[in-house]
Image 1 (cartoon, helix red, strand yellow):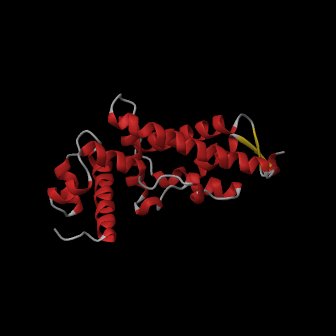
Image 2 (cartoon, one colour):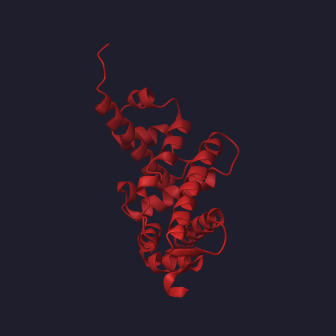
Image 3 (cartoon, rainbow, N blue to C red):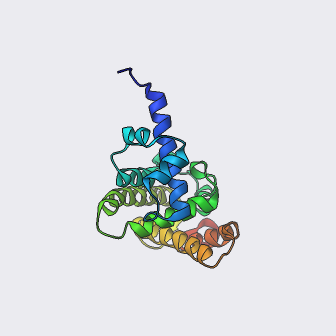
Length: 195
């Protein structure tokens, strides 16, 4: 059997995950099928199974894809607010795809099972990174925290997801939310200008 090029294999895996994200954004987790994913990826079913054992594994990979990392967080408060209030362009998808995928995955992950177990450590890591960055900004004197960094990270995450959900549920353009999300984030901290 010929060896597979690692670069090709990695690109093919990412192609599958990106296809899954598009399918989830369009149909939701439950209604997305393996066939939907391999067709959207432009691959055969066999190619998909080289990388993933089943749909749960693909969905878990979609959850992890493009996740927050320490190096992806801006080092100033204003850049942090801009990043958090403008998720478009992240992961190479349009804003509506990102938001719909995120909300579908988050909604499904509250049910006991494989997705819930996959999501817990991802959520914890994201909140930890978010809280650590808020604490660094507070330590630098850019912001004052009104509650713990962890509580602030949780509140900010809830604000962002809640506002995005409301926009989708009310057919409001997501782009219109940027200033409102930014204003909401600023309510959770004291800045030099507001001290």
